[in-house]
Length: 378
Image (cartoon, rainbow, N blue to C red; front, side, top):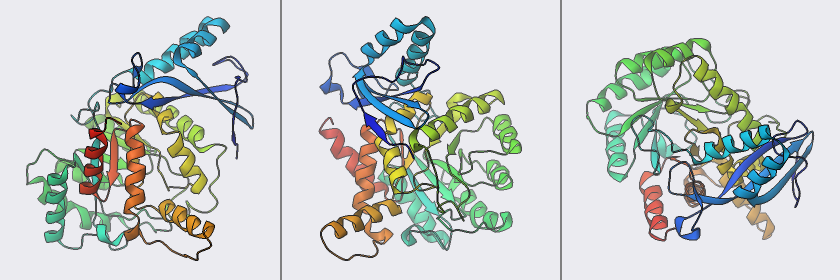
């Protein structure tokens, strides 16, 4: 694993063959800059960059202004300048609407699990009355999207049959679509057959933890012009937490998405139909997750909206247990029911990083935190 060394000087000119170059904007509010660049046409701005350069196992970070970065690139070569301008444009260009949602403001995706084994018991819906109640509450509390899944993807979870997944989700989705509300319904599934069935009943978005890696899925989403969320995951849920390995997770995942977006566009998927999810907790250890969160603005360079899901996840418990240990206290477990505060802290970090979609089990609390943060112009 590479470690970032913060230095004053680049390893090489930007975008030359000697080192890979990546840029992560240092986001601020409009009130903090008078001449900053608007990030992705949204609510955050930037003037300065974290420039990451990677050469074999050496990884450095240099902070400089966007103008200085362009000047350094220009002094090296025209090709270097062209690439630098392209990357800055990717950061600045306004995102097109996704599933008719305005990506210039943050959105909340509520989570409804129709599963008996989801890692967070309070998110499980074992009857239609509870499902309907949760759905209506999420709408009232500010969810733009409700994500419905019938198969647990918690670490160690075994894959269920497609028949079982359909038995869990198809009927409820049909019923929820009858409410005829503006809130969109997303299907959290990795099975093409389930996607096809739910598409017939009006599902608005497909959310696939395997990033639509099978060709037949790509053909389906291209033909149906469906909005999709592609997530990064190492291995499969049953074994993804067994010794995950990265050189440096943010860069490795950025490169994965960069190639994936090109592949999707080549088979006819519109760029405006793509949202990326770095997959916190999916084949990542604690330091990987923290590195991704620290460099979240990096992913704006992909030119598509970002979704982040940290709600109630185990890294919150791990960090809390580590704090107990530092204070000489013994604490072996922090249950998902005790991870709301950490969920909100990371959600607000994602918001100030300009992330467009926050996936959460706690819509009311997350929306309230957004309201309060917005009132301070942070």
